[in-house]
Length: 86
Image (cartoon, rainbow, N blue to C red; front, side, top):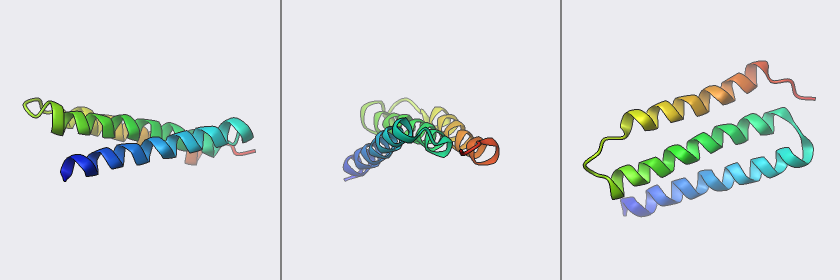
């Protein structure tokens, strides 16, 4: 059951990234770019979670996942604070 939930979370983050990226490419709105960048990082983090829990249970990838998630959220925070939305 955990494998299904981890995979669905990764696919949801990937879907959000694709939709935000497509929106940014059509409108060039800065917040869509920063949100897409955040979800790209969250997607990678979720896929590493799937690999960590399902395929590599003997290897602890928690630190890598946390660093990627922090970078993704910091990119969104940067866009919220310093992003100029036209």
